[in-house]
Image (cartoon, rainbow, N blue to C red):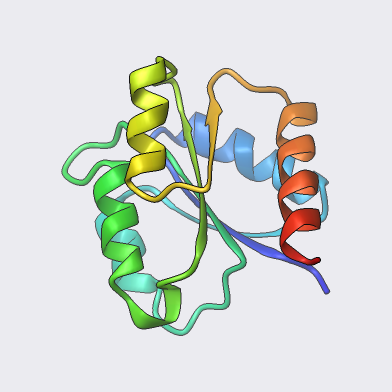
Amino acid sequence: MKKTILVVDDDPDSRNALCAILEALDYTVISYSSGAETLANLSGKSIDLAMLDVMMPEMNGYELLEQIRKLDEFANLQVFMVTARDTDDDMLKGYSQGADYYIPKPYTAKQIKFGLDQFFARNEQ
């Protein structure tokens, strides 16, 4: 069954590039440009994984992750942080906030594919 991935990134070029990679890998993609837009439209959606940018205005990716996890239907949603914030401290903050994986920008389609393949293979066992 085809997996659905939520992509949230305020930068349209970054969001569109990631969505294009995911669609080429045969994932269904739902995308939004902000945390507020995401939270307003998330209810009732079937999502297998979220990929959140960290640096967004008004509500950053960590705050969005916290809000998503407060929703009963998404309390256990798997979340990748996808961001240019790539220091050890940034990555550790992402993991301490509940992220399941961290992908630093810039990334390649091969890196995205590898991360998703590994992640879904581990979680389907």
